[in-house]
Image 1 (cartoon, rainbow, N blue to C red):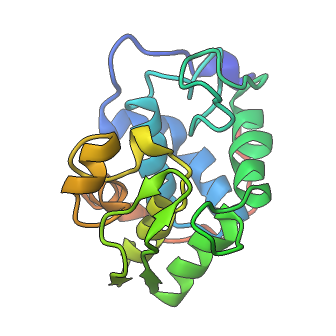
Image 2: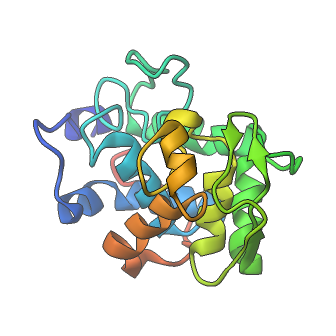
Length: 204
């Protein structure tokens, strides 16, 4: 079965339960490949897609808006959700570099933060200021969320802070990645682990 035919854009945001039911097997596959916690991946996808409304479904099949140069659809399109996750999201994370100066790919930056249980927020990335600069974030999902929030993946208009977007986001949030963390613990706490299976999503 084609993933494109199964995951059409809804007319309103999905409930957290429906979002999990639709996308958790894809998030688990990405988790296995990237060594990121499933909860963080679901949180990022739910934020980027507004709970499934934008780009995660047909026709873009782009779960985290990877390769979206202007902020407006059409984004980089994939033939189906399987390609969007594997050659889109996973490949993007493995082959593109963090913009805060670590010298690591997104994949390695976040995986290292999660495995070590600690991440120090840098002063800035190439898009500007970072809330909580210099703060050593420790424990559970926080380091991975801080690493992704600091990385520059989301640019200035969506820096994964908690209090808005752009400059106001950077000025009013306690630390980069706070929105990712809050979304993960509020809706995806049962998925605070790295998947260890190689099972490819069943519709692929």
